[in-house]
Image 1 (cartoon, helix red, strand yellow):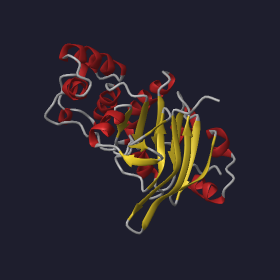
Image 2 (spheres, helix red, strand yellow):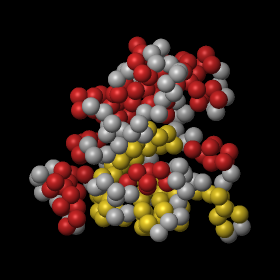
Image 3 (tube, helix red, strand yellow):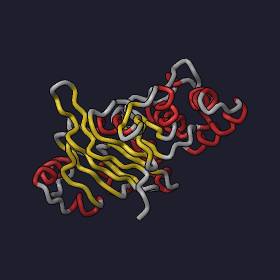
Amino acid sequence: MTEPLLKVEQLRKSFGAHDVLRGIDLAVKRGDVTCIVGPSGSGKSTLLRCLNHLETPTKGVVFLNGVPVGVRWKGNRLYQMSFNELARQRQRMGMVFQAFNLFPHKTVLENVTEAPILVRRIKRKAAEVEAMDLLERVGMAERANYYPPQLSGGQQQRAAIARSLAMKPDLMLFDEPTSALDPELVGEVLAVMRQLADDGMTMVVVTHEMGFARDVADHLVFMDGGVIIEEGAPADLLTHPHHERTKAFLSRVLNTV
C-alpha cells in the first residue's frame, strides 16, 4: 500500500496536569481531504497545531512523507529539531487560521509574496507573477493592491489561503477557517476550499461546517476528550454512527440521528 502523506502515531499533548490529546493515531492519504469535527474543547485545534509543531507534542510522532516532523533521529533516539530545521520543514505544510493573520500594513499582493521572497528566495517579479495566479485562483486578483482593513472577512480569508499556497505546500491545514466570518461570507471561503479539493490538494480541516464535511471530505474524524472516538467515510459516519457520543453530537448539529 502507498505510504500516507501524513501519519500520526500516539500523539499526546499535555498542558501541566491537563491532558488535551491522549493518544491520537491518524493517517491521511495524498490527495485526500480529512475533516475533523467534535465539540468545543475536544482537542481538535491542538491536534492541528501539533501537526506542524506550532505546539510541541508531549509524546508521539508526526510523519510527513515518511519523515518525522519537528524531530530527527540521532542513533536510536529522537531529538528536537533546531528552529531553522523546523522552519524549513513547516514550508511543506500551509496553515490557515480562524483569524486571518494578514499583515495589515501590507497589500494583499505583498502579503502573498512575502514568504516566497524571504524563505523560498525567489525574485520579486517571479513571486508577484505566482501570487497573481494564486489570487486569481481564489477570486482575489482584483483586490491585489488592497490592504486587509479594506476587505471583508471572507476576502481576507481567501487572501490568507493564497498566502499559504504561495509556499507550494504538500499539505494544507485549516483551523475552523469560517468560524470568524459572518454567515453570508462563509460560502465564498468554502467554495475556494472545494476547488482546492477538486484540484487534488491534501487537506486536514477542523470545521463545524457539516455540509462541507459531508460533501467534500474523503475521511471524517470525530474527536472528544482528546481522543478519536470514531472515524470513517462521511456518508457512513454521519448517517450510521456507532458510538453513543458520536450519535449525541450529531443529533445536536444535524438533528438527523
